[in-house]
Image (cartoon, rainbow, N blue to C red; front, side, top):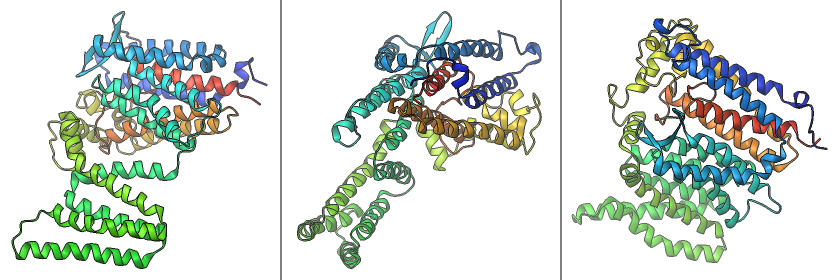
Length: 471
């Protein structure tokens, strides 16, 4: 039967304790990040730490209200929440308040709220509702399209608000798809395309194209186990490429590198088709499609990079990849962040004793770069504790998700895990220079009411679903 009473008994208290610990530690670090002698009281509501305390109090009220609501309410009204948030995101595009070049805020009672943050839990609910519906299976083009649209719609609306960081978070739902039956090769292909995007920015496209051809041949040999024909095809293709290059150079034909490699490919296509027909090897056509898609993507990367991404995004990616460097310009934030974290050493400088933090060397040090304060004042040991708490939270949530008897609760649980993991991984990576700066808050730590409330709603809906699970 469904557990509908005595919430205190069935609530997962280890998760609640980790949540409260992270929120408390976040509040202390916000205080340390913006501390000043003139406003030394941690309860001063004219300062960010004072406002954060008010939002924490509201957060606890929100958590209690969610736990008091019947769990079936979230199942029944899942789509309602989703469409309401989609409507609000549309409203923000036309009537929102612009902050830091992103028109992604609305102002209510003198306070700014970012609807994109709340769209995360709404999308998680809608996704769980659809994917848990009767007869649903992630095994057809239609199911992939419908499921993807639930995620793509908020991504597009948030991108129109010029908030790429928040939009990027929604890609984390791919882990939900994977848990619910998406094939391994799809995840591998997505990871490969991300890697390919990076490689194209670093290396010459001609080298990339040669690498893709070689990879396709290797995959053919592994899948078909026809190593002899794989070797013959490699010798023929690269031999013909070498001959074309030699002829072009000797007779000064002026063939471009791409022509030299594309001509042999064009010649080999009929041979591959004949081989496929004779051997009835359908996987060969799949490999040709793989080569075509990855090659086309390689040639489109530069266009996407130069025409779709904003200037500051391009600069940050170039800085991360070592293509360009500007430690006093676009690389200033990350450079100062690494200095602050590194200066903490093993034990840290002590609470309120961080010099990099105190003298505001790190921009946005109470929001996106809050982890700098942890690294500087608490050192490696303190940073390890914080990361350990986040890891413990994620592992606990995975355990809770796996023990659910209802598909809705399990899918929603994995949505919670995916979003939190994405935020934690990207935020920590960007503060130490392993990922471009994209403006993603650290859950329960970063200053801000919208992010704190949205993460709390996201988490406690799942805790309510877990507490009411079927025995």
